[in-house]
Length: 184
Image 1 (cartoon, rainbow, N blue to C red):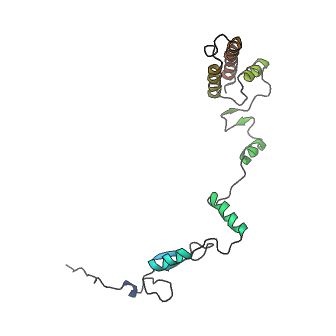
Image 2 (spheres, helix red, strand yellow):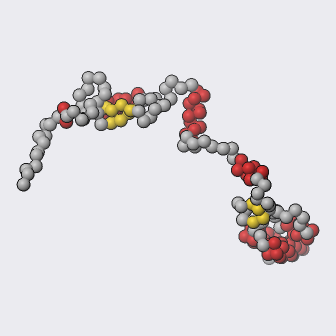
Image 3 (cartoon, rainbow, N blue to C red):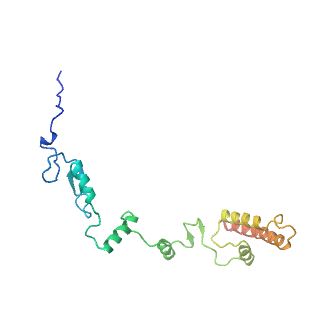
């Protein structure tokens, strides 16, 4: 059986040929801490010992040598993780220009609003304060909101609130029937 070699406690590892020394001039310590050479090439770095990397980091200025416009451009680019960005809403504009959708809007899970709604449906939508595109879930939420707002129990004896309550119920039935028929 081979005997394990022991390394003396005071062994100097920097004397080995494959060990990188600190790049600070005159330092003989082991260079095991990386520090970037400049802000444009962050993957190109110096190797320093702990004392010298601390000294280097205290003096490090990422924006050194940049103009005010370059600094602002760098900060703006960092907001998007240095990836290109597009103006908000441009995807919608592009979709509107695409001819192959044929009235379908993939983001709204249904068809685009019909061009000619029956008069009673338009009036009911107005009463419910809604517009197309519309889902049953949106219709139900708005209906519940308006019913709570105009319920006769909250407005004891107020005929206008009672009429509003009836109009909301009727409008809900009209729009619901239209949505079920249109399969939206």
